[in-house]
Length: 396
Ligand SMILES: Cc1ncc(COP(=O)(O)O)c(C=O)c1O
Image (cartoon, rainbow, N blue to C red; front, top):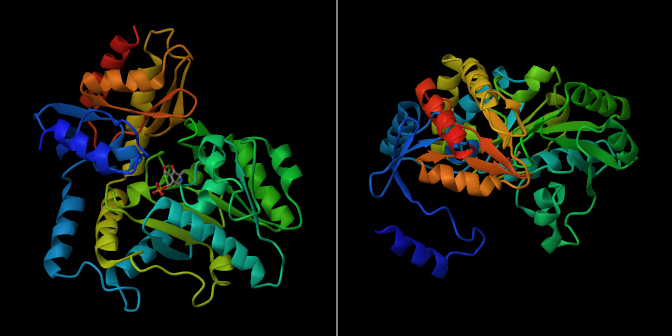
C-alpha cells in the first residue's frame, strides 16, 4: 500500500488522537535502521519511544517470538501456571529490590496496579490512607487514574473532575512542597526518577533520597515509575539504583519487551504480603508469549551488560551533543541513553524532529521544547556520530 492510501484510511477511520502523524510508514528494520516503503533508510534514535532497546530484528526478540508461536501456545490465561511468567518474575526479583512481580500489558496498567497495591497495603492494616501524590510535569499514562497522576493540564483538563479522587501533584525536585502535601490520608508518593515525557529531567539525587526518608518518616510508600527509565536504558538496570534509593513498589514496561507489549509491577514483600486473592488480575497480563519474549530479552540484556553499554554509549553521545557549536542548544541533559536537548523557544523541537526525519534520522520530542533521544542500545558509535553531525548541521 502507498503511504497516501494508508494516510487516507487512517484519517477517515482511526480515532483522531494522534492527529497528523510523521509522514512515514516503516515496514522493515535491522539493527538501528528502519526502512520505509520506498526502501529509504533511517537511523533510529528514538526506539519507538524508548521501547526497542535491542533495535530491530534482534535474535533475542525474534527467536523467542517464533519459538513460542511454533510451540502453538500464545496464551492460556492466568488460571494455569505459565512457565516463562514464573521465570521472568524470578529473574526480575533476583536483579532488583523486589520480592514479587505482577505482569500487565502496558506502563499505564502497571501504574494503576501499583496505586492499588499502595491502597491495599494500608486497607489491609485498617489504616485510612488512600491518597497518592505525584509530581508536576510527570507522565504516568492515559487511564483515568494515571491521567489523574499525570501532572500536565494538557492531559488532565478534558477529564475533570479527575477520577479517582485523592491524586494530586506537587512540584518535582521540591522536598518542602512534598512534605507540605502529605496528610494523614496519604498512602504513597509516585515519581519518575527521571521525568521522560516531561522534558528529560533527572531527579536531584538529594531530593530523591530526601523523598525516601520522608516516606519512611511518615510511614508511607514510595512508588517509582521506571516505565521509561528502566531495563538498562539509563545506565543501571533500573535508574533508582544509581541514586542509592530503593522504592517499595516499582513499575516497568517499554524496554521490558523490546517491542512486545508487557508491563510489570514489582514490590517488596512488605507491600506484596498485604495483597490477597482477587485484589488484582488480568486476562492477558503476563501471558505466555509476552513473558517468553521478555524473559529472552531481559536475560540477554543482563548477560551482555547492557547497563554498561548504555553508560558508555550514553557518555559518548552526551559529550558529542554537548560539543555541538550552536547557540540553538540551551542544554543537553539526561542519564545513559535517555537524553534531552533543550532548545530555545524560537526553535520548535517538533520542527527539528521533522527536519531530522527528512535527513534520515528518527528522533523524538518531550515537553518543554526538548528533543528526546532514546536510541536502541545496539546503535553503533558511527551511527551516533552521523546523527550528531546531521543535528549540528540542522541547528547551524
Ligand atoms: C514514565 C512513564 N510512565 C507510564 C507511561 C505509560 O506507559 P504506556 O504508554 O505503556 O501505558 C509512560 C509512557 O510514555 C511513561 O513514560
